[in-house]
Image (cartoon, rainbow, N blue to C red; front, side):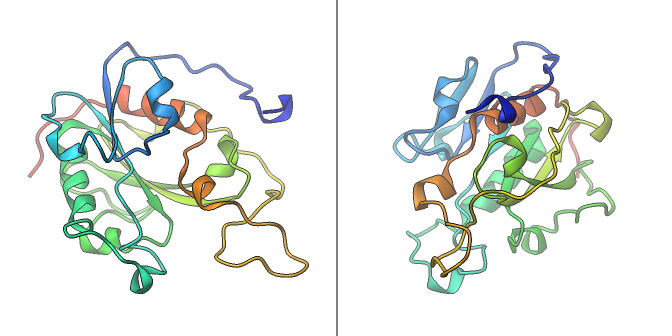
Amino acid sequence: MNDGLKMKYQIQKADGRPVAALFVRADSIYKKLPGVECYDADRDALTWRGGCPVVAHPPCRMWGRLRHFAKPVPGERELAIWAVTQVRRWGGVLEHPVASTLWDAAQLPTPGGKRDGWGGWTMTALQWWWGHRAEKPTLLYIVGVEPSRLPPVPFRMGEASHVIQSEKRVGHRPHVSKAEREQTPRQLAEWLVEVARRCRVAMGP
């Protein structure tokens, strides 16, 4: 990554609390971060026993715009609902695409809207701010930390060099690969882990 995309601030880390990263790729950057316990497809997030805040990236193809074309494995859609439950119980953050229908299904708060019974709230962000080559608009459902207590968000203006789309159109910006669509930029992974470490929860409804 060039100097222009490096973070221009230092995150003041809350503490060394462990964090569980749920539903990560086999080659996930989370596996290189200290104090992060990772659950990929082989390890199976459903075997996690709790006890610490989480960063959850549950499968989204059954919740997105192209869900009618998806070919999920049995039980895949329900993983996102389970992930919401873990964030509410232990604190942390859940990430999904900006068009995810999970928000309606799980009655999650809309960005800028009222909080839910667990004190959870939602923010929107562009993964491009953290170094993704495409904008990749994202919803983040957060439980256990106030907006004012978040690590600094590296907002930047301009235009991403790439887009996320199913087909490349003539004269349009190039699209990223399938793997890059799924991968989390290292800077974003570090930021999400720090968000989770700052979370403290009291049992909600």
